[in-house]
Amino acid sequence: MPKTGRHNSLIDVEGILVGHFTSRKYASGVTAILSPEGATAGVDVRGSAPGTRETDLLQPMNLVEKVQAVVLTGGSVYGLATADGVVRRLEKKGWGFPLQDGHVAPIVPAAALFDLGRGKQFVPPIGPKWGAAACDAAGSAGFPLGSVGAGTGAMAGGIKGGLETASEALPSGIIVAAIVAVNSLGSVIDPATGRFWEIRQGMGSEFGALGKRAVKLPPLPVASAGQNTTIGVVATNAVLTKAQAQKIAQMAHDGFARAIRPSHAMFDGDTIFCLGTNKRKLPATRGFFESPAAEMLTEMGRSTADCMTRAITRGILEATSLCGIRAFRDLDARGNA
View 1 (spheres, rainbow, N blue to C red):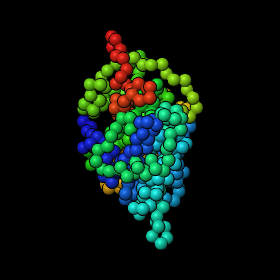
View 2: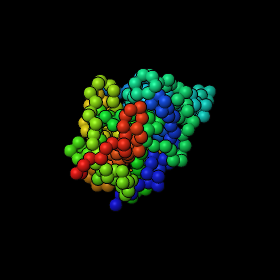
View 3: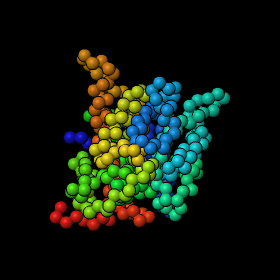
View 4: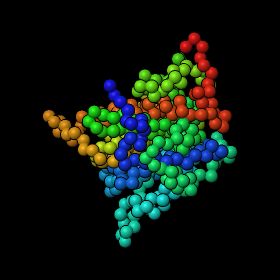
């Protein structure tokens, strides 16, 4: 039977640190995922309204192999400025692409979601200071979940979205994990039953009694261009090339499609980054197909998709009502379910 990592979290991947900055007042925030030693990175963008930074650099044909951080942020186009604060913090630590005279250029890709108009003012005072604060909070211990960080002002299919994480320990010793901020146009709840589309994916008791509820859904909001987006990171302790990281990011999108319906819409900017911290070599593939580690990459892709599905469900379960957006936990129970 599959099993989670020790914390069922992105921090189960050796070499990954996570920190948040949260403003409930402005219903927005930032999540910083750091890799002090650098991580091989890939990305796959499938939504049609993305807000991103440094994604072209991650294409396999381009120069830089490793990143020092990935930023998930609220604030839409304004939120991308939070990555500047992370860059400055990492520069002071000496983490980055090496330059002359001991200088470094920290490589910090980012993706933003739309949460404007949900807090005290339409555009929150989001910027480099929020990014720096999330960076300062990053560590290898447990971190808050739900309506925090990039998931603070998130909304998913008319109910409160949130930020969550999940992991899986594979028999080979490879760890795979995901973190996601759910701010989707599509719903995570099956309207026919009032239950999560992918409640069956839960490992052990991770969804708890709350996950068994059947609820009455509020009316879906009217779709507006660019006002949604689910963004996330999958990570592993495996040694990866950039092409392999990109492939795993592609497969992780299956988790979006299973847990959120519809996904990858014209109104979403759905984006997944993949990080490999290069701690454990992939087992080699034997036989006719000599593509390096093809079987293990396929298994890792399956696992990242499952972790993403579980994290999305957990994100809705952990979310708390904010700024008039009701959380799953506060919805009325569905009768005769």
